[in-house]
Length: 236
Image 1 (tube, rainbow, N blue to C red):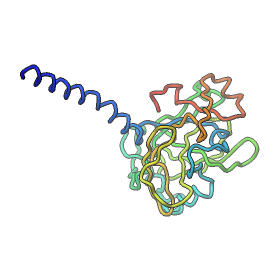
Image 2: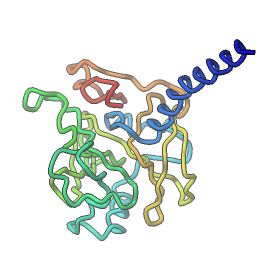
Image 3: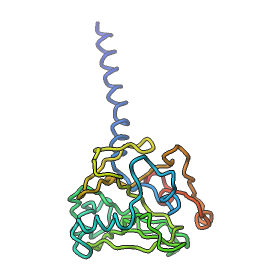
Image 4: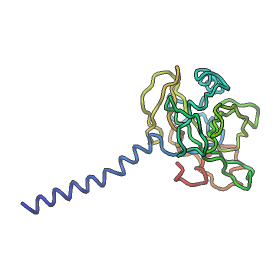
């Protein structure tokens, strides 16, 4: 009987240990980290990332800003995560009142600005729109650690930026699974958004998105690709 009791105790202790990675995985899938950085060709690939969701247009982003009070009204603070875990100081004014969880995910440059090809982690949250400006540049939207407002950006298609998907309709499912990861969703006005940046490594049909780590190869791309900030998957 004593041996049986010890065996049961051992089983329960192992069960508790083995449960921890699963809990951490689900929690991480729900929004920890910065997500991946994608070039514009990946963001606008016709295969998409998951049925029923898409990369927002410039107009859809402007609709979000309008609901938040309009440009130059402190609208960015309402989207930024509070504190200094995912932002450098000061990040004052951030309220994250809608649970959008904007975090300073940074960008990947093509020309080694300040000798670094990866810039502005914890400083800038910049996400793609699907709206092109011309043959080489497209619109993005930016939140900054020391600025309360949202900026409309003119970004070269070759750089790497984050993606925040919007739902095709206004029905909020609460969560959505994309490429094996579970994301929380959030309703702002009549729009439904992912509550964290995309980190998919496959398109919706299962085709892999090319992971490019070499800086020269990245700068020459004219097809879809992704990377992790600093080529470090720990930033996922």
